[in-house]
Length: 322
Image (cartoon, helix red, strand yellow):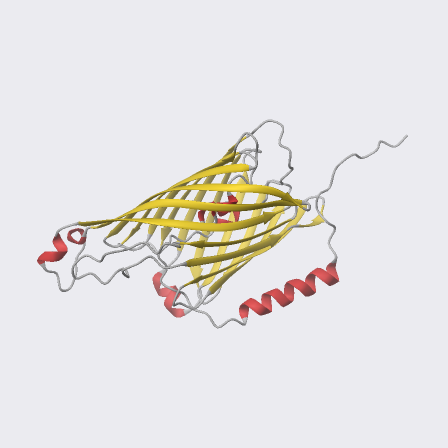
């Protein structure tokens, strides 16, 4: 007698004609946007699709576990270029409708050293086959300017003394996810916190500007051992043109992610993530420009470590690739 297969498959089978047409139109739409790289005030990450708490407070609790993630990003590789480190922790609470998240960030660009502490609150409700999460985040940033540590062509005494600025941020977002799909919309710096410039500095504007992020993705089962997950992120800053990432990811043997991103008006990001076990993951991304200005800046390396502490009897099944 043939043994019955009780495996539950949460992924829809691939409908080649319909899905390829939809994906093609999406790619054409985003590549048709005439957009440029903007001077952003928030740190940039290339593996955000694996931990969206960095850009959306409503993502808190989406792993249905106590999830911890560390990032380190070395951008461009020359003296004074951006270097970013972060630690995030988020988890649903006991009744699971509420989730909390915390983030600690350090971002260095030239003479500016930024430290941030942020706390997120998300309220989640069941909606259809998934969950709708609404999130708020409050945080504090410390900006320290140390001009004496760098050489300038026109140095003067006012650059030699370090200057420190403390400001605050308020962020909000919504995030919807099922076993196969996610979509998120968020905005940071709703309060437009003040950034008083040190005397003689032209590095920062006088306020933090709004940053808007729109994300989406969907997983398809191409075979029992191969998952295809296209996704995108559209981002914009006040008084700047928007930009976008198009991501194509493949999960092999439920163990290894291989992916590539097209970052509009910049170049390509190649990334990978490996599941050491069901809880521990390690990832790496390599950014490289394809236009002349981006090539002159150099390449970027980003490392990610993630560990999820299981919670007993989760009421909602969420695949690990979201």
